[in-house]
Amino acid sequence: MVGTVTAACAEDPAWAFLMDDEYERVAPEFAGGLFDLRVVSGDVWVSDDLASVAMWDSPSGGDDRPRRAERVWAHYRAIAGDQAYERLLAYNDALAAATPGDRYWYLGVLATHPTRQGEGLATAVLAPVLGEADRGGMACCLKTATETNRRFYERRGFIEPTDFLLPTGQRMWWLRRPPSPPKHLSRN
Image 1 (cartoon, one colour):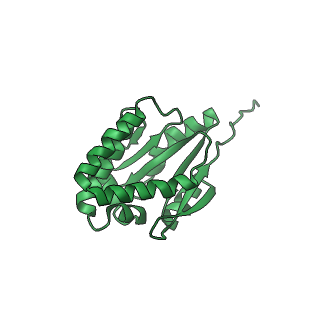
Image 2: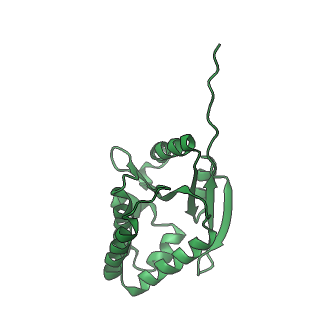
Image 3: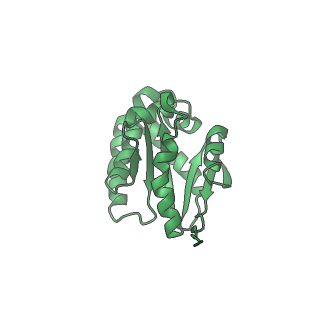
């Protein structure tokens, strides 16, 4: 799973900002931290061969999430160093400015190994939470830094963009997918 995420995010501008010139060393630790934050609560979906992964934060959060995040990011800081950790804090500050105040499912990571893209794997690992969100009348949100990714998400209903900038000036988008109305079956 870590290999899939690091391979998929190698050209992502946000990850480039976070990792600076130490991508190969820092990215696996970062991907592992993102996984560790979400796997305990069951908010990680993967394809059978781990070639695609979706990592979500549920709207319910969880009582232990702040303590878990503190441990995960302390470990990351110890390995990645203070400069990488400061970039993470700056990234989170930029993201917080665009984050809505209502409850929503948050897609923290969607990654498909580059050799497997275009096979529908990402759509498949997104489907469980998108369906649950629709049934519960809950929005889904995410952030992205590339036009290609933005178009991918727009085709899946993430249609309400909010622009924000990283400290480097890199443009990013916070995207929101409102819940789809329930489908009513009719009898014939």
